[in-house]
Image 1 (cartoon, helix red, strand yellow):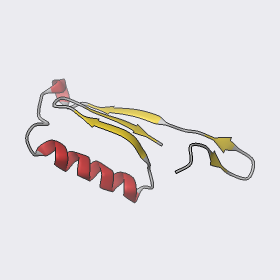
Image 2: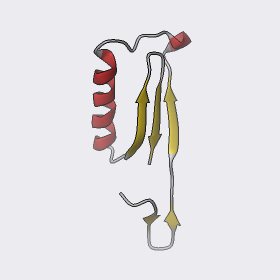
Image 3: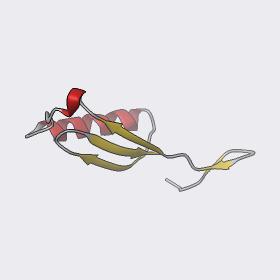
Image 4: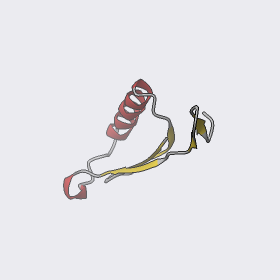
Length: 67
């Protein structure tokens, strides 16, 4: 996708930094769970036409930069 998006009267760039943390930052994202969570988030973003610029899954949180 292009860095800048265009409409009839505007050119814009919109990026969101999303950090998802489990309650008390418990380290629950271990073994096979991170791949499952990442795949689910990618499917949801594709369904809503959201571009994932960057995704990082750690044991206690997930960083995502979305456009």
